[in-house]
Length: 110
Image (cartoon, rainbow, N blue to C red; front, side, top):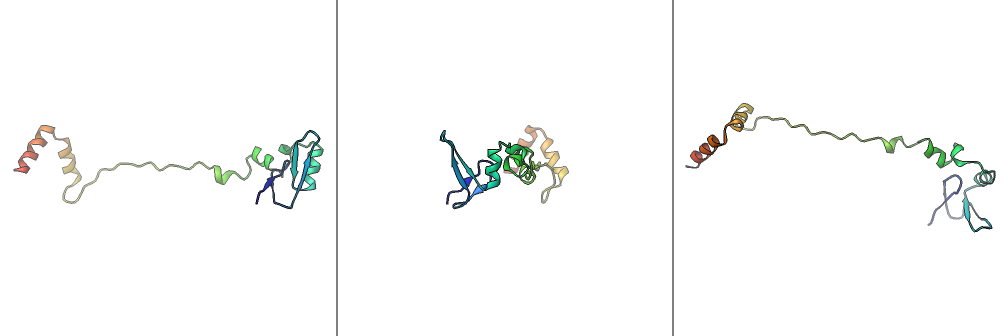
């Protein structure tokens, strides 16, 4: 099922509905109803007619739900103790010089 789009209002036109007009120069227009067709022939700008899709797009109507900027959660690191070792013990080991830690590792292996 192919949906057409009204050339004036921008609404969807379902099969069997609306009216297709082809000008002498070969350009075709598809209108959903007589109101859209008449407004087109009267050369009314669809951007200035409040019920058209173009007007609603121009003035950002009905876009608030989709366009809201999503806030991202920032991950914060926090140091805490692990089973059997408090935070102070972990920090003390981390701040030791690499030579001392290597010596302790070698001693633990023996």
